Image (cartoon, rainbow, N blue to C red; front, side):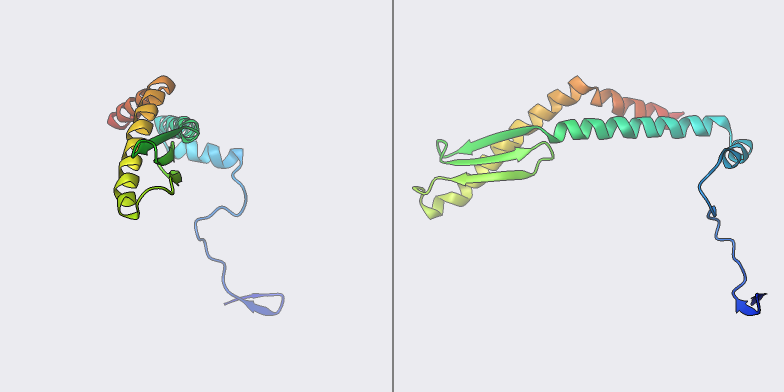
Length: 138
């Protein structure tokens, strides 16, 4: 125990965490202990992560609709490949619905995957994956 002001307090421990926000001094200390290329790699990772988030945000705004049963069942999916709506014509027989929903969902998934692949190519998403692979090799 540590006496302070007449009261017993637990002895201070060093948890490894900084007691305040990092300052220029902290960064200069880090720079003396770590090679510069490590900081460059960290910056590259951050840049790639930021680009990936931007691409993901752009792709999530896409939508595709699949249908089955001559349009009596429609399923819409978003760019995250989540079903956002299902519309079923009430004239359908109950026994036909599960198979038609499955077919419409598969149709929507195929369409959204084609859209996403095209968008990824346009946005440079494939280049991003190659950059990441090259960076990991170094």
